Image (spheres, rainbow, N blue to C red):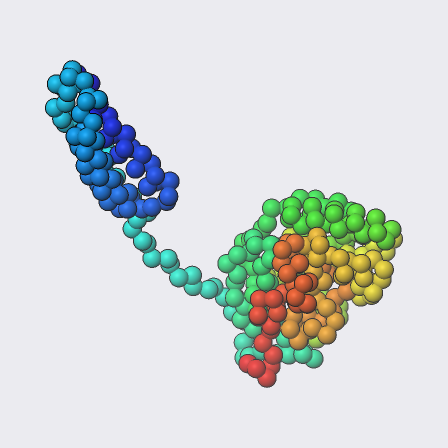
Length: 313
Ligand SMILES: [Zn+2]
């Protein structure tokens, strides 16, 4: 013999109550107690219903109205707590650091610290397009982003997000100003950055190097998110690019495509670098727009982490 009519009703109500409990995102514990009360309620209602409308029950059905075991909850309808119900402690991330390779305290040159004399925290989110990297926050040496070859450059590479945004920036600049932007330098490996820093010391002296050149790990170029740019008719790094028609347009409109001018004039005491009229950083449209709308000039200020000045150490 199959499940009785009353038994089917009980199961139907029980199933619906279980589904509703699950759809509302309640815990298994809630569902369990809800199912129990719903089941009791439905059984009471069925009893009342059967008592009130006894005429509707045929004699044949009535003769078979002996409750069967199938109308009782089966073990499968009693949810068991899942492992997610057990809260697990979130491990506290312990920052890692690159210790100074020249000990004895920070050494400053005209307001710019020698990065080799300060300790830098290794960032835990190097793949975040808006990550803050500077003399005090370093990218891990092992981090190499996904890279693609960038358009409007001589074989330079960028992260895909930055490469796509670069095309849009270039094309919009061309459409509005007629200027043909050109990417001189994008991604640089840790090794290239090491060579660049050491070569700069030889070429221009330590004081200027600390002002203009990033030490390995403290550079944005190994993130694949930094762009040194000029126009195609002068594909060289120039201090005055930012004051050209193309540079001014990028400074004013870059945020719409996710770019910020990274080292503005007169912000060296905050960024740790002197003005770089050619260096832009992709941070994503959301952060760039947020900075623009709130007149925040540097990523350090955006995160509330300006560099530590000598008299504040
Ligand atoms: Zn650069």
